[in-house]
Length: 543
Ligand code: ADP
Image (cartoon, rainbow, N blue to C red; front, side):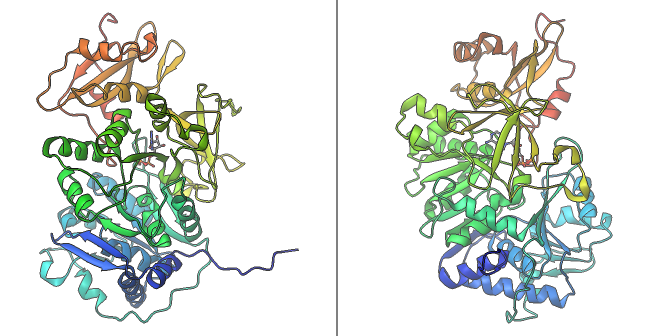
């Protein structure tokens, strides 16, 4: 017998309907790309996304068409996602930090028909557009007054284009499994691979994200997604905030410490989210210029491991809780968040930070296991590590065009490429990406643990660790340091700082100082480049 309940498809635009109707006045504040702060609310965003859907329909956009966006987080980008999904088309976020050739490759792979773009990126698009034959129209997220000059054909100002219709439109009724969004992994290892979210996966992911033990979002929050919409589905914030009626504060192009601080404080942000490099620049700004964060309750940090020193600085200097999160583009993206369950809630001091530096536990809807190379489960003993595998309704079932099929097994488990361990209460800790782990004499050393420790040294701004060839041990860790402005730590002082905090055989064989560490387009340490730069490097005593 089947249940006798309604079949109410989980569609993205239902979220903006809900926000517009029940939280209509809640503010959406953006630092506009043109400069001034712009204010709107869910009621208006809903109206304008209906208008946009109608406008897309007028242009002949159909279910399944790919609509690229290359834009900062602003109200226009938000309403565009709903307008696009509202006609059954697919928002496809492009990361402007990739090389033009990579972006063109991705656009051609996705066969994007339209591109919505911020004025900032027009010079880049002028290079890319001629390489993408499927591209019919470029819609610039601005008004006529701010339109940049361009020699490209078929370029229109968004506000003019939109104004050609009204908002009298009915969302399309779609199957909830219809594709809604697309995001390519940044291809730090191999060609980029397309992940295709469905309406259903986006909605179920939002239900997971807003829960108290996850992002803990509600209508009294003002959430600032500093993480760009083009990174890993914008961490789902475009759906989770309107789902609960949380106000949104959008940083636009202002990603530096000072601009972020201004919005956090002037707009009384309560929850925010971004990768560690962003928070590094905020903390450095606060160190230099002073300031406090009285309204901010929590900072969600993910994308790379949040160093213990960062978690401590937020708590001890600003009384802000860090929620360390792990996820992937392939997971919509939340996998785990580190909130404290009752088993750990009473811990204090270092023991508390020991837990808070873990990546945390999954919401209902993310299943996890760790296995050895033969797919045998590994005990959750808090120390034995192995391959981390996941499955769930907001986890990719395959990549676009079936690339990377070997990462998915027949029982639906997706191999994340991360190496991790689990503890007895189901807290996961990443030790490394499987490609970055250092294999020394048959044992594994976590590059992440070493980096996190080194960055706790008061004179270190950033640290990276790679494995370099060693004739006896196969690989040994090399520590690469960027010094803090004005500081001059010695190799010995750094090694002394680390000594005693890790196993002797984990100690780096050498420390080198550089002015800059290369990063990926999503702000992670670009280990492939570091390895290449240092391929001729010889460890002391290992000639
Ligand atoms: P990209 O590599 O394209 O930036 P993702 O954001 O999807 O895209 O990258 C996911 C990977 O980032 C994870 O598989 C993991 O290796 C790493 N990662 C994400 N969050 C964390 C975290 N909190 N700690 C350590 N690694 C993390």
